[in-house]
Image 1 (cartoon, rainbow, N blue to C red):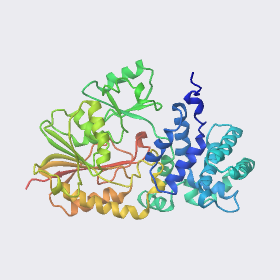
Image 2 (image 1 turned 60 degrees about the vertical axis):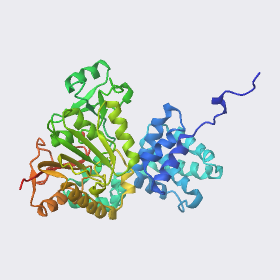
Image 3 (image 1 turned 180 degrees about the horizontal axis):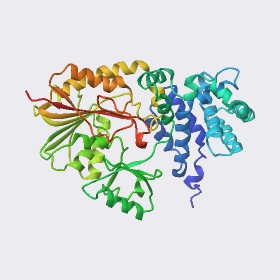
Image 4 (image 1 turned 90 degrees about the vertical axis):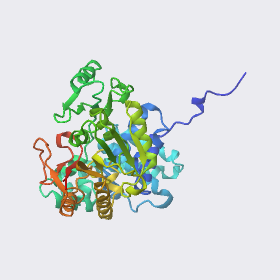
Length: 450
């Protein structure tokens, strides 16, 4: 007879707060992506706890400067070296007390017990003391008079360099943009037109008791009232629907592919726009999707397979066409250019801390290189749609203005944007939260025939 205990009894209780502290440490101190680090930590917890771990990690990164300001006020000296992860544990504790509905005593107990999971029980008294002192100081620390004296980076929870760039680009709207970046993003879905139209799928959602907040009129993108697991969406596994923000769903509409077109999607991963174009215009002649990162193309292949679509997928550098282009010019090109990602901060709060001011100039140069190279692959009379998930004019309107001034065969096409609340004279700039969509930029260029 076996004396071996059931496997679940051998497993140690996982401390969610310890994992959150490790995840935030990896992002902020080691420069790793939250999208890479969070799944690693979520793999260690029960399915029911994955949402809590995500909420804490996202929250700490959203409010990082404010949380660090709170902790700094209660510490004689900062934690460094091997103790550095406990700095993030304190941020995790303060975040729960300030922003979550977890009772204070439960937040403190769980956070203090994380010191054992992080293998340093000597930190127990410090963590306990700081969090209890924070609760005692809470009322005086949150007075409006105190908040108004805070530096802008702490008050708005964004890096100073970014605040300055947004102030320069949007002198009147910058506080609203920063405020929208702090919101939790909605869940938008895209209906596969090969199976249902948007109206029919809305009926299926109603039958599944999934409520809708809005339908974007130009693209028919559907915004759900609250995020839901994809497996609960009717026909998800059968390819009836995909998750994609309403702003990103404008791309296929604006590119406006026609039957028989030869189409290129540059920087295509993870493939949402590639698939959307194929769903909308199944009778194009061909679709080529390229991305410089071969590993990211796995997601493109997965999406194409689930949706029952076909494209030629190539790991290739858009800035160096001679290494992959076979000489056939394209009728339509979507260039979803590498960018700062500053329009999707509400979905990826780590962007605020991973991106640096110096990155922007380098990205602008790279965008110019790709745009110039890809333009040479477009047929005369063809259309190129330039897109970014950035709100910085340097990457968007200024980039396109520079391109048109230096390419006599490039003509800007007016975009139907239903009188967007913020419209540059060059292209269409969606700001974060506008129509409850992500920040995004589009410019449509026609290649003039000689």
